[in-house]
Length: 126
Image 1 (spheres, rainbow, N blue to C red):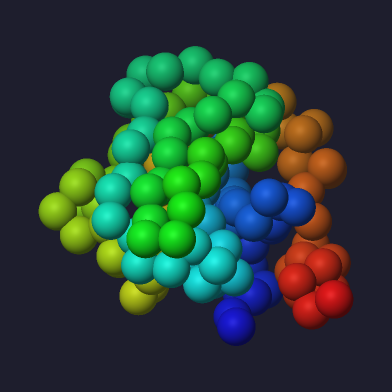
Image 2: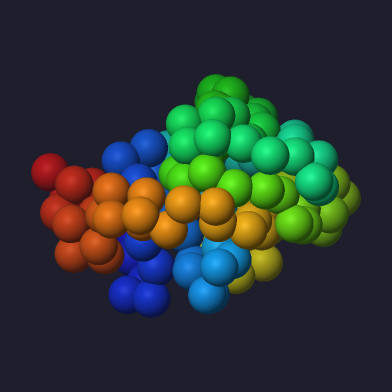
């Protein structure tokens, strides 16, 4: 299982790549493995404002359906439209091609609540 060192993580198995005031969000390798083959990804629309903890969308898989929760507050800048035609990009490439949304961060202090790669690796190794 992969836990890239350049990302931040949540206890709910989302990853966050921060780039200035923007962030890209997806689900981790661990999460996609637990869900199994992903068949549908739905996300809120571009321009949507959200608060930390709000649902950003859902992922339907063979084994289960899971919500993707906002790890921080912000506004949706872009959604990964490639997932409409190939939702299994998340299974095959969760940290690159399988990203779900790009957002503008509205409260950078919320980044302090996220887990480091080492903290996340320890959580999923238990």
